[in-house]
Amino acid sequence: MKSKTKKILKWAPSILVALIIVPGAFMKLTAQPQLVEIFSKSGLLPYMKGLGMAELLFVALFLWPRGLRIGFYLLTGYYGGAMAVELSQHIFFIMPGAILVLVWLAAWLRDGSLFSHPHKQQTTVPSV
Image 1 (cartoon, rainbow, N blue to C red):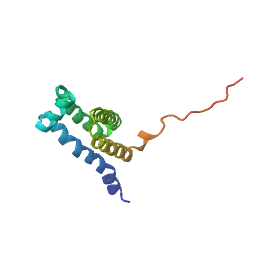
Image 2 (image 1 turned 180 degrees about the vertical axis):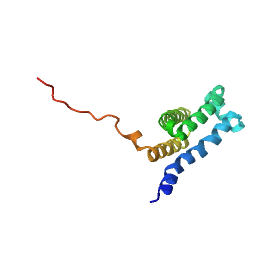
Image 3 (image 1 turned 120 degrees about the vertical axis):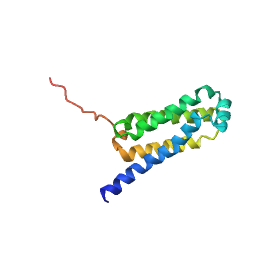
Image 4 (image 1 turned 45 degrees about the horizontal axis):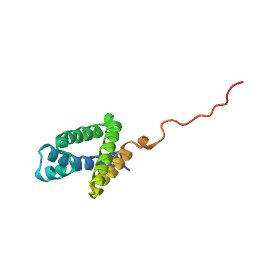
């Protein structure tokens, strides 16, 4: 496979992540009525704009090659929390779960070392 094709295949899921998250973040920042209603019901309305800004920041870090690792961790925490909130409100949590799966796939394609053990344990024989 050509290097250009590999690069496109590595980046396509990351771009898709951005195309899914960024519009939702802007909807939060502009206080779209349907989101205001949802956030009011869950008691999170005061945090809606902050969550939108956080999403934009996390996606930017995720797309930046040097920020991939921290962006990945932040997006994982954010969407894990979104799933927990939706479960506590008896809402179908598939959307944040699907986004989370896509984030993990994109991260794995771009840097598989995120999912490997950072240090291999070396067993040494104590000297006598």
